[in-house]
Image (cartoon, rainbow, N blue to C red; front, side, top):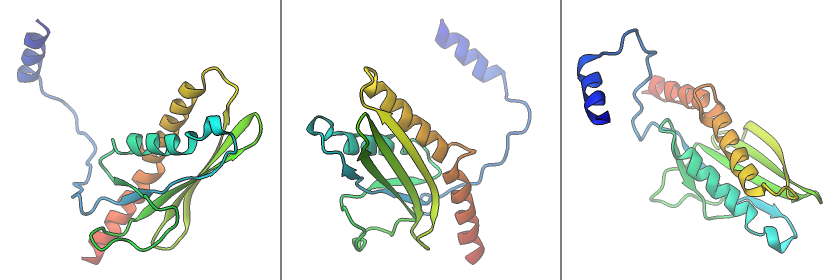
Amino acid sequence: LLGIILTDFVTHHQMTGNAPAVPDIEPVDAPLIEVRPFRDFIQRSDLSYLAEGVRLQLISDLSHFSIFRVRQSLERTSGTTPLDQRPSDYSLRGTLVDLGEDIRLTLLLIDERDGQVVWSSLRDIDISSPELSANIVDMVHSISAQLALPSGVLQAEALRKIDARRSQQ
């Protein structure tokens, strides 16, 4: 029944009004963000997973946005880019520091072209909370939204860079 209703709606109703124009972005034009391994200054063995877990969740969340591409870096330091990979446009770098009852996550989004910090964030994670896992996931979703939603940092930077590339052609 639901299928019949949806089919009828799609075939007999059209969207009205003008949607805002969104530029066509070819995959080669989409800015590339490299998420580097986080520096981990947590001394507690029971939280040894935290840095990599937060990083992987950020990669997963950010990969859902099509206006840019995300690549995880396997290196701890910024070295040379392998010959078969294009250099990244941005790098996302993180540091976790043990503050006792809290863990502080510091994130930096760096423009790899000029080394400038485009965005930064400090978040404290209450490790004594019984909802630690849920709080971390919520925090990562919030960070991803701040970076990637239409009003976010990466969308504005991505459009600026696409315009700059197109004007050079």
